[in-house]
Image 1 (tube, rainbow, N blue to C red):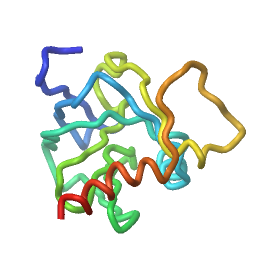
Image 2 (image 1 turned 120 degrees about the vertical axis):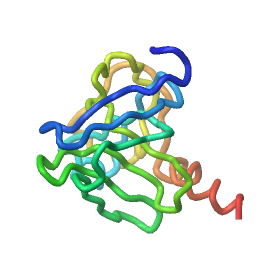
Image 3 (image 1 turned 90 degrees about the vertical axis):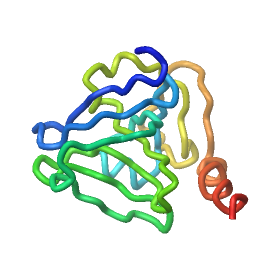
Image 4 (image 1 turned 90 degrees about the horizontal axis):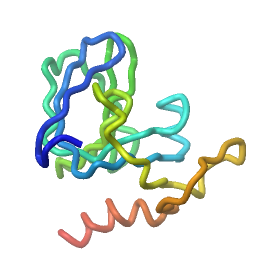
Length: 146
């Protein structure tokens, strides 16, 4: 992992979207929810980040997938790039494979584990949260703040 607070760079498949982001931790999370599986073509492997900066916002497409979250992708190649809170809180999950050096991250958590189909299983032990536990982390914390 680079020095604490150091931004990392990445891009989409075609290069139309180049970005920098500051990982909150040297960890990758995997989401098994049905929306992430459809959107990413598998599981969404993501790194929680702050200070996400995109070189050209015009290349981004945004889809409001729920009352509280939206998915950001490249308009040119369709690459899944970011999941973020719609409330402007700054919580952004950046697609781990989009980083230039994705080997920096440890596989630490699986979310929406109760939505995972029985057709695959990841080896190893890590934190596993249900959909309700995951939503409480994001939506519940917003309700408590209001």
